Image 1 (cartoon, rainbow, N blue to C red):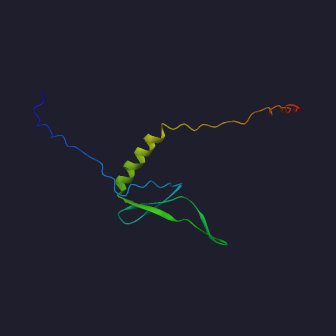
Image 2: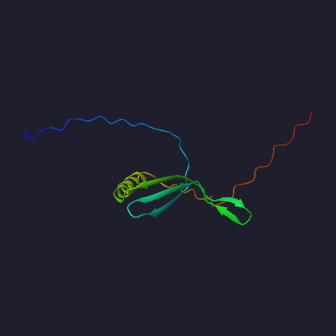
Length: 104
């Protein structure tokens, strides 16, 4: 048995404020003096003729160590994904003749 004092167990509860999921297909990363900023957007949108914009809907600021932990978590999570690629058929399907119309 160990003679070290045991740490008291702490309960952790998650609290969601403004729990709105938003789809992001792109993430832009920029680095400040002490933070890393991740801007999320759903993609490029045509604003007016000849001008496209990428509207940012969420910005997350993290410490560099937080970004490292996030990268590790994302790497672990994506190991479980399998990309399924469906190959097109090699032989074109045989056309089916339409059934003859029944006359009454």
